[in-house]
Image (cartoon, rainbow over all chains, first blue to last red; front, side, top):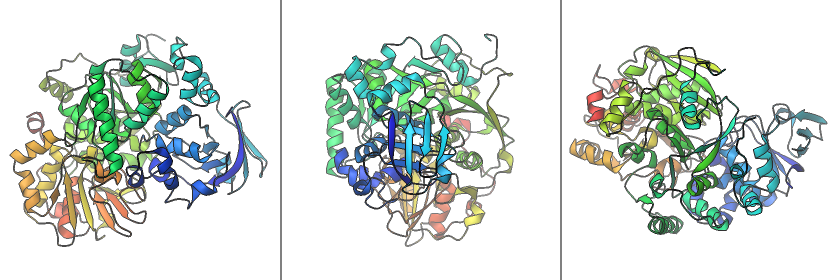
Amino acid sequence: MTLRVKGRAWVLGDGVSTDHIISGKFKYQKARLEDMLPYLLYDVISDFYKRVRPGDVIVAGKGFGYGSSREHAARLLKMAGVGAVVAVSVHRIFYRNAVNVGLPVVVSTKIPPITREGDTILVDLVEGIVVNESKNIREEIQSLHPLIVDIIKAGGIEEYILKHGGPPWQFRSSFSK
Amino acid sequence: MSSRELTLTEALLSRKLGRAPAPGDHVVVDVDLVYMHDGTFPLALKVLRRLDMEKVFDPRRIILFIDHAAPAPNLAAAIAHRIMREFSRKHGVKLYDVGAGISHQVVIDEGLIEPGNVIAGADSHTVTLGALTTLATGFGSTDAALAMATGKTWLRVPEQVKVSIEGEPSWWVMGKDIALALLGELGSDGAVYSSLEFQGSAIPYISMDSRITISNMSVEAGAKYGLFPLDGLAKAWYKSRGISTEPLEPGSKATYSDEIVMEASRLEPMIAAPPSPDNVTSVAEYEGVEVDQVFIGSCTNGRLEDFHAAARVLKRHSVKQGVRCIAVPASRRIYMRLLREGIIEALAGAGCVVAHSTCGPCIGAHLGLLAEGEVAISTNNRNMPGRMGHRSARIYLANPATAAAAAVKGRIVDPRELLPLGSRLMDPVEVQMA
């Protein structure tokens, strides 16, 4: 379902932390995710939550998702309509959170440096490629573990569990490659 | 293959799994401890309720902490706290309520861990517990929720990096200086998905409180674990909590994906300037920068040793007029000990606001947010724009003596200017074990 995403690029630099995505000073004022949405990337891109279109892709530099474990960051990006994140490197807690909420996050060294705001980006987890269609440059992405593909394919781990009746590790004895 | 020597990470994981895994393997493990706090628990519960999985696999292995915005500074926090108290009662799960302390520190204070435990904390600084040779790392709400309900989680076996810390640290060096220097070396994504294993001739000199600081900040480079060896000090610590330990050593010929060597004997007092914790240099580079606020506390530097260091400055000098100095012990146990030692009185007498235990100031939740254009020096772990208030506020990270010295002078100074010469800032073993 979310394995193939095409949209406009929003270009961010290195070190975009979960504090940048949803700052603690706003998060701890609100009880509901919906009420946090207007503060998504608040100090980074003004009115991002209004301007982002479904399927848009965040293209960032090194260390995306650094910092706090707050899953709200991944959830709010998805809630706003972000279709995928492409970054040079990604911090692990954010990565797991993104997988769990069904937000594709791919590591790419070639695409971020050449991408400009508004370029058309294709992320295709079936083919294993990320493409900047505006610049006609593509990169193969490292194949994802089947466990992760299964979760993203289901639309997140909640959807996976609702569909299969339990988390993936209930149905596989080993995940070794 | 089976006879290869194992790193500490591999040795711990193989005990857990019954076989030695290789980096990159995805494995399912039983968790020994799951904990969450008011910033992460409400979302976890929402997920479990939607899945009709509201249960705990073992109430003795789950802990809840109200530590992030506590006592409730607003209605949203009050709602979160109420949800947690209700859940605790319903499922017989231990809850540490307002003022008990920051999760990681309470787990340490209360001795709720054993070497090799797999710990899933819904907080990025769960890596703190690696100082006591545990496989402790942070998870988001959903992963923690599923671990709480099922007792299991999946892990990608990390690459391992040997971090050799060498030489005898100078008297002014604290764990924070080592952590910052290391972060400057690694960069903010230099250890993503890796396990850092701290070794080297400096280890015996590094106090437990300082080790905890170093493990705590390993996540700022993206590390999954920040592991100290189970050496004499760690064993003594466990013994002092009535917890027995078995010998555990990495193989001398174990192979690592990378190795970093740091000379601790050459370290100056270190500082991380905006906009990120890896923007590290010596304090000298920023001497003279005027500060509006000083924060001494957090899971990074809110321990006994940290307030002992700050008090060396603040027992003899007062906070400069016009500067706010906020001191927050990381747990009630530490707070009580500081009370008995007269340090709370000394800090308050010097003009500090001494507050109850909370994560508040570090995450910009409450207790001292920064206004537009203000400058802070802080002992916490993160200084990205907007972390502690307005996005234009500038945050410098340093050890507690450096922070205290800035509170006295109203500007960043080399703390050695205000410290009695030659006495180590790291607490000796007998102080730590008392």
